[in-house]
Image 1: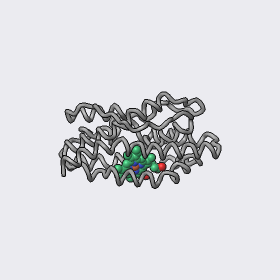
Image 2: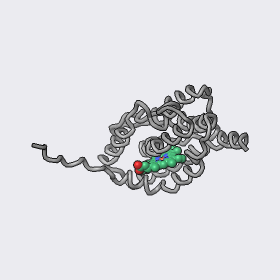
Image 3: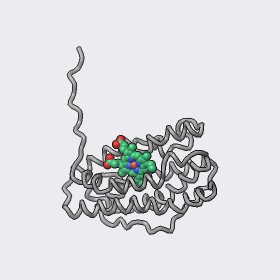
Image 4: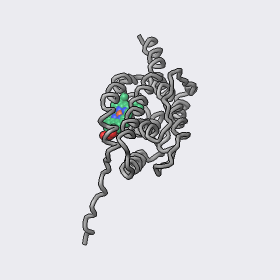
Length: 208
Ligand code: HEM
């Protein structure tokens, strides 16, 4: 006899996640247009450039997030870290990982700031799983060869995303917290774009 169907756990969308989604929709679209992925990646060199451009923001953002004060939310301060996957992909492509940015890194002083920035970095894995197979097909790469970052290979991006949403939904947030987290998330999207722009511009100039 088959077991009775168990109710599926609720998909948690509390006020914080709702505020972050609604408040950054346009910023996500603007960054998507700017990065133009996977469209911009037609060769291994272009893949290296894109990964270097991502590392330029990921590395300083993850350092700030690891140092932020996460007490008040039961979450690993290093949840979903992925800069090491960018470095591994670059190494697989024989590109030295020397990305630095002169753009100002967002100040992530409060828990709400850190939540906003973590939302952006964790959420990017949702787009990465769409981008990875297209890049692999186009460049003739085996699954996960130089696409570990997009795939979050060896990690559990689905579980990280769910843990994050559950932790946000389990806490009370003031309207000021919601506003502050949303501002930090917007600044994080903008910072990713600002850090990537000069690296992508050099490569576009070479191709043109
Ligand atoms: C440029 C190429 C990109 C594409 C094509 C893309 C595509 C997507 C897609 C398809 C989703 C929704 C997935 C789903 O609901 O299952 C998504 C979600 C998301 N992406 Fe992107 N993305 C891109 C870049 C980025 C980058 C660079 C970041 C961050 C730096 C980012 C941050 C996010 C966030 C935070 C979400 C979660 C939205 C939510 O559900 O609240 N994306 N993306």
